[in-house]
Amino acid sequence: MIQDAEEKMIWSSLPIPGVIVDPGDKITEINSAAEGFLNASSKTIIGEPVWDRIMIDAPLEEAFERARSSNSPLFVNDVDVGTGSRAPLHCNLQIAPLQGRPGYMIFLISPRELAGRMTQSHSVKSAAKSAIGMAEMLAHEIKNPLAGITGAAQLLSMNLSAEDMELTDLIVAESRRIVKLLEQVEQFGNLSEPHRVPVNVHDVLDRARRSALLGFGAHMKIVEDYDPSLPLAMGDPDQLLQVVLNLIKNASEAADKKGGNIRLHTFYEHSFRLRRADGTGQSLPLQIEIIDDGPGLPEDIKGDIFDPFVSGRENGTGLGLALVSKIISDHDGWISVESVPGRTVFKISLPMAPDPTRRNKKESS
Ligand SMILES: Nc1ncnc2c1ncn2[C@@H]1O[C@H](COP(=O)(O)OP(=O)(O)O)[C@@H](O)[C@H]1O
Ligand SMILES: [Mg+2]
Image (cartoon, rainbow, N blue to C red; front, side, top):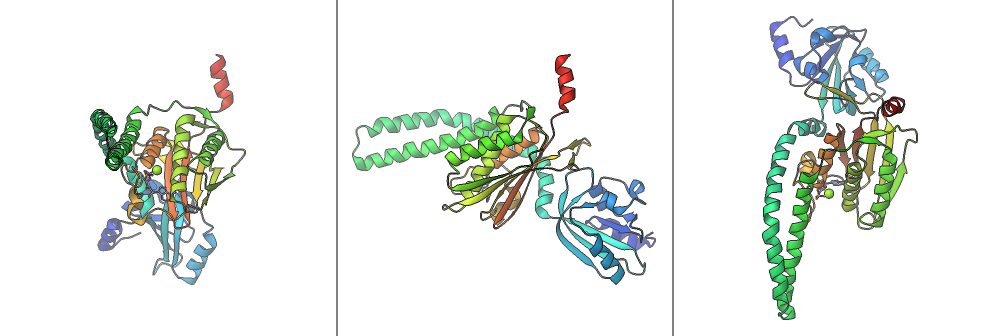
């Protein structure tokens, strides 16, 4: 449809996914960025109904028709755009009537920064892995001499005045802090492959909730908002508990000391699929959201919070979310975050346990 060579060049160089539809809402043209975004070639996709390929979680059709009939543009921010082949991405949409072609509309789909980062974070995982490997080695090497230093300080302190003892106490306290950090680093190394079994995520959430309320989350109100018909997930209950505890802990630490609210929300999302770089797909219909009403992610680290050693807290190690992200990816799951002051949502998507009837058959044979 685009015939002019120059126009063609501009269209295919556009770094933003662009799609043109005809008056019957069939796709007539997509640019290369859109081929990547939709994970399809223009050959296979031209002629398809646009709403079959671009799934938007907002009721858009009326506004879209209005834009078409009044020949005016339509901007839609902050919608989840799915393509049927991978997890939906958070996007802004710009839609405009194509000048000189009545009824034709052009879509520009801009994935938002954070959503874009999330896809990247899977590919930089190996970099994070080697950073952690290095840290693990160091952790191991530092622990022994550190134990020596702590022991020596404790011996010294036996004959000291109260004033000098403050100093040895400082050595001991700071050494403990380092040991704690090192232990967290080592946790990565010790993290075995998940032992995956059918698991009720509500049991995991309950355990996490109860243990949080007894400790670090005592000042929080934690409410359950469960879909009671949620099927079993396929996962390692202990590792998933670690994930949820870490997320509740972060929310509790970010909240005001006087308290805050956390909502544990579960629901089923049939169409949630993840398409990996290697071409394999995975259905991740079980959704767990941990939602808090605290201050939100610090702006300066927002895009990097899943990387190791990125922390917005004075005494933070930055390892909590790195561990969370590792566990979820070992589960072939997906984690994403959306945060504004007053509302932070960590969303975990997990695969379902295989059909129990089939499983029983296998066990009995
Ligand atoms: N629910 C949340 N609300 C606000 N900030 C958060 C939340 N969860 C995580 N963060 C930010 O992300 C950072 C990284 O978290 P994490 O990896 O667990 O490391 P740590 O807790 O040791 O700092 C935190 O320091 C905090 O700044
Ligand atoms: Mg943490």
